Amino acid sequence: MAYQSEKINAWAKRIVAEGVIDKELYDRYKVNRGLRDLNGKGVLTGLTEISEVNAKREVHGELVPTEGELYYRGYNVYDLVDGFTGERRAGFEETCYLLLFGALPTESELAEFRKELSALRALPENFVQDFIMKSPTKDVMNSMARSVLTLYSADETAEKTDIPSVLMQCLSIIAKMPQLALCGYQVSEYFHQGAEQLILHDPDPSLSTAENILHMLRKDSKYTPLEAELLDLALVLHAEHGGGNNSSFTMHVVTSSGTDTYSAFAASIGSLKGPKHGGANVKVCAMMDDLKKNVSDITDEEQVKQYLIKLINKEAFDKSGLVYGIGHAIYSKSDPRAVILKHFARELAHEKGMEKEFYLHETVARLAPELIAEKRKMYKGVSPNVDFYSGFVYRMLGLPDALFTPLFAVARTAGWAAHRLEEIINGNKIIRPAYMAVLPKRKYKTMPEREREE
Image (cartoon, rainbow, N blue to C red):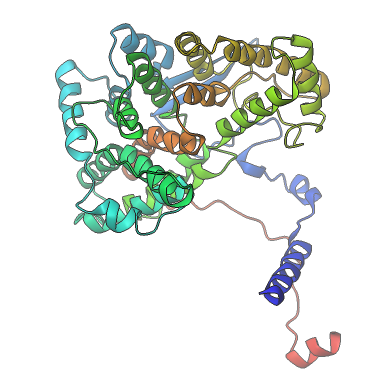
């Protein structure tokens, strides 16, 4: 094994030495790395009617930063949230309906849709015992991806890509994803983290998605109305975010190849698992934990400021120089999801007796953008993003860090489903971006010639 490790390390060094492309070439050939230009603007690669993100408006012929806006099917997310919270009902199922069908449901349509989801929540017989428990994984996202692929074998229409079949497959995955996440987590805790008991609650057909998550997670299945309301809100705010985010773009790319629904969803889960996409709120929580360890009085604004300066100067936490949860690829002045979540988080913090921690988040959210602006040249401003508050909300709900990204996947499944259907309806070509080869042509050498050169 030692020999193999040394050999692998040597091979790895060779790959790095041979594989680095001169950065100047990217500028010379005007390559938009990450499909973004030098100003951070995304390169247009498609059209969508599912959602829209706005962070600028035109003034006298120039684009200037504005308060962030998020639209689902043309509806401002502020209005959607005001609607279902004002009428004291869960909003995630309504949001799923809107994203899938392009219209807000009537009362009877929503009731029928919820009934259909409830009927689809149950996993195939012995699925947990035969697939999740027999090969427990430490990472819940990997468990979810594998479980989604395994559901393929239980679907006789799995290879069909006509719209009725795909819609049914998507609805089934949306309905089952919460249980896949919770079972994956509980099994991982039992087999890998030494949990004393393995508790698996079946989903309750009478409960909403958010209520079912809390019901399946907690031993006693108890939760307060405010807890369910906040989790439901978080699911709504994570359900979709424009076609350009990494996992939704992955859904379009993979779907364009003509593959099956289960493979496409597994690919999107794999994309979301990446810490640059779905794991940011975990990093925010870890950063705030480190802050509390290194600041004697978290109500002392000057102490918090000095910690943030060290953070930005790569002298604290993970030495990355990043203030996690501050800044976004599109939003500059504000992220509407963060604004909404902060408003409701204040109420939950009061219920949980965590006002002090809430005010700490407020302080960091106010100070960090100013300090970042002083330290770095920026093409746009920065503000708290949804991850800055979502992890804090999840912690107040007693959700384990290991479930933060899986819950993101549970929510985003709705958006992925809408994007898969949109790609099938409108796409007629496989998505295949261009890459320019920059390595010079070389003459083939025989084995003796290679030996002599050694």
